[in-house]
Length: 157
Image 1 (cartoon, helix red, strand yellow):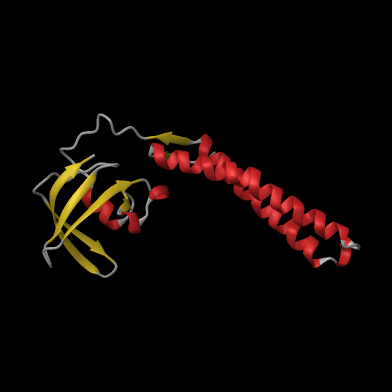
Image 2 (image 1 turned 60 degrees about the vertical axis):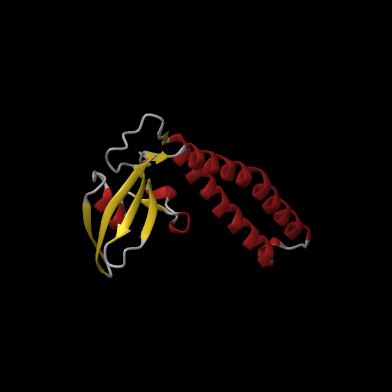
């Protein structure tokens, strides 16, 4: 039994697009590679054929994994989200109390986390430390490098 995964609408749509790309473009590329390798003769000593068949197996595994993820995906709706507390899909503006710098993170499910885009997982140390906190509260968060101190300045959706 697969685990339920939570996605924003954008994340779910990206997953569907990637699955479609793998099924259409990538399957076609690998089928062409196999056909070309097959034309070169003896398959028992054809490294290109073996490599293409291995790539095909990996692609089919990835496709089946993505299909299972989509089958167990749930889309989160932020239209009536409570902004009094930091929850999944909240955008939280923080003040780092050590250096007074401001930073904004969106709390997302682990499968959509991307630090470069300011999207952190609710399962990460920072995400866990922010969940349930309100504006004005301080959060002491233990990370591998030590302890970080933040003040929650704003919560939006």
